[in-house]
Amino acid sequence: MDYKDYYEILGVSKNASQDEIKKAYRKLAVKFHPDKNIGDKQAEERFKEIGEAYEVLKSPEKRQKYNQLGANWKQYQHTGTRSGDYANSPFGSRAPGGGSFQYEGDIFGSGRSGFSDFFNAFFGGMSGSKTRGGFSGFNNRAASKKGRDYQTELEITLAEAYSGTTRILNINGQKLRTTIKPGAYNGQELRIRGKGEQGFNGGTPGDIYIKLKIIPDSQCQLQGRDLIYNAKIDIYTAIFGGKVEVDTPAGKLSLKVPKGSQGGCKLRLKGKGMPEFNNPGSCGDLIVQLNIIIPKNLSPEELELFRKLKTLRKKYTSRSN
Image (cartoon, rainbow, N blue to C red; front, side, top):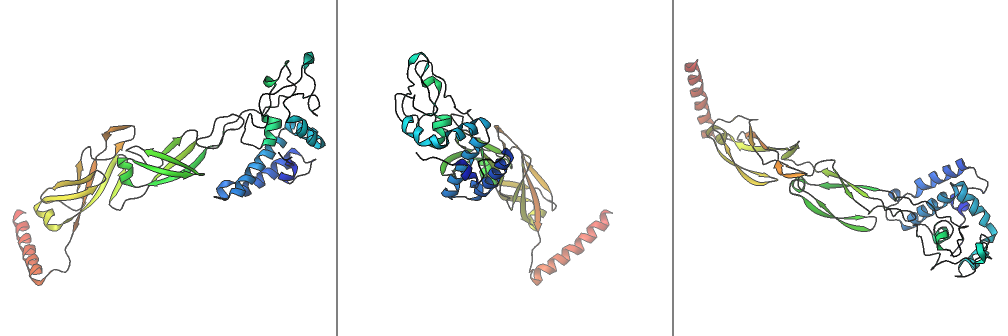
């Protein structure tokens, strides 16, 4: 286990003020933050090392103990790894009642905090509860702290939002299966508990928050819980009526078009819209908006027929008036 020079890690002098230490930490934390160095393991380790150094030096109590350690580090390293007498340690003393300090197991392996063994040995790995004879003179266990939450964004199609889906996400090297229930909506946040940053000194891990983004669909839009579908029909179906097949997130549906339908006319199919996220049995409506397509490149015969229809239409209108 190597000695860590926390002042050198932050690039400050041993006489640096708390304000200077904070500024140095913030500058380095921004530079080596994992979000700016994705996939760079060295930057990730440097970021952890910077955080560990700041954890010690920002606390007057921890900083004082760390400064006292100083040149006695080699002596402590030698005496601290024995599972017997603690009296010769630079921080130790005989326990009250004449008993000697004892610890159970490896002090460098207990009380893991997510920081280095060096840190755990002095600030997280020892507790008075591990002593015999009531010794409690070296109880430097740092307070537990919840790990940071992670945030990410996930794009899904409108069909996936409608029917639900399952995705495998790779977040900080973790492969996580995420189930999205039917009725997901744009901007919705999903939470995966305990998969964020590891907690400090026994604290609970952070969570992962996934923000959903629904990819716009060229034919179908979401309006609240209703689905708005733009259907193209020919002029003859609009005039004579008929059936049109629409391909919606709910599947292919056959829709009856009334005779004489106008462009922009909206037809409603109840209960065929987006399911409610927390109540899948309840759904919005499917609203089909008709767009009449005028035929192009008409033959001379077709054009002549339309001219006759136009003349007949004028005569019929004048009689009606």
